[in-house]
Image (cartoon, rainbow, N blue to C red; front, side, top):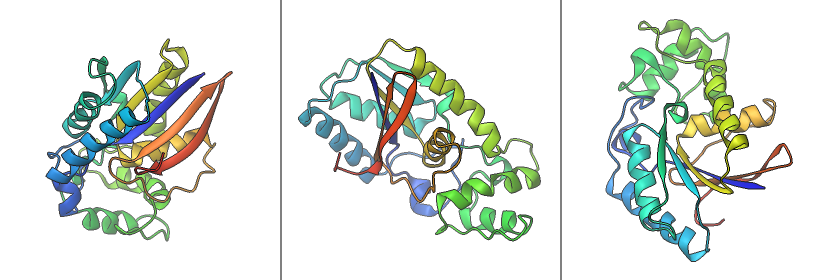
Length: 216
């Protein structure tokens, strides 16, 4: 049996400013740094040990991973970077205001209207519209992200590790849950520095809880 702890990175400057982050980046805020430190300490208090840590290669995820690991039971846990754990790419909308992106995508989405306050499920559904109007051909649809997700799931299946820490991003983690549920999962929101626990046993992935903060 393998236990996978999926973590969303800590709060960033772009999170606070309401800007599209995607595969671009901004630093963790002080709150984001503190929350990552606290999470590592909480893992330590609960006697959770990690065999390996995988992180998105984006700076906010790397920072979060290093802070969690440094405060955990295993500060020497190997940390490996994976581009497949990156957040969804939003192409030309990267760095702009989130509301502007959702508004423009909603115009071509056959009736689906998405705002910052919308559910993550609707945000995943509108990714194809964002890709359709992206002017630099870098935006990803759900199907594009699902290919990356499946590669990560295969890595987990074949890993020798029993306890794995994976640090990634909000919509990416939602896409993982969507893939595992055959697109029946109704995504709401994955908080910063939250824990989503998944168990892999006898060929099956089972989601134990989603987006927990200090309650796992």
